[in-house]
Length: 115
Image 1 (spheres, helix red, strand yellow):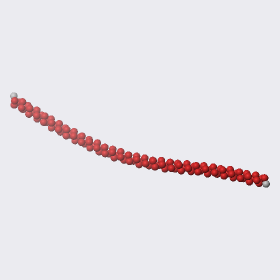
Image 2 (image 1 turned 90 degrees about the horizontal axis):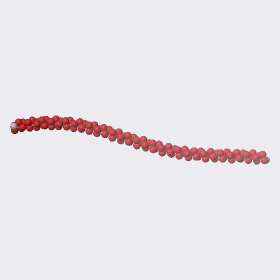
Image 3 (image 1 turned 30 degrees about the vertical axis):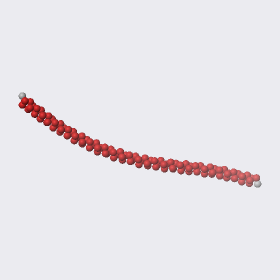
Image 4 (image 1 turned 180 degrees about the vertical axis):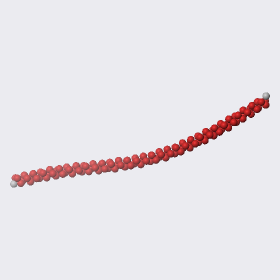
C-alpha cells in the first residue's frame, strides 16, 4: 500500500508540476498577447502618422509646385515688361536726341540772326 500511495503521490506531484508549468505557459502567452496587442496599436498609430505625413507632404509639394509655376509666370511677365520698358526708353532717348539736335539747330539759327 505504501508503494501505491507513493506512486499516486508521485503522479500527483508530477501533475502539480505539469499544472504549474502550464499555468506559467498560460501567463507567458497572455503576456505575449498583451505585448502583441500593444505593438499592434503602436503600429497602427505609426501607420496613421505616416499616412498623415504623406498627405501633408503631398499638399506641401503641390503648394510649392503651384507657387513655383506662378513665380515663373510672374518672372516671365516682368521680363517682358522690362523689355518693353527698355524699348520705350530707347525710343524716348532717340526722340530726345532728335529734339536736342533740333533745339541746337534752332539755337544756332537764332545766334546767326542775332549777329
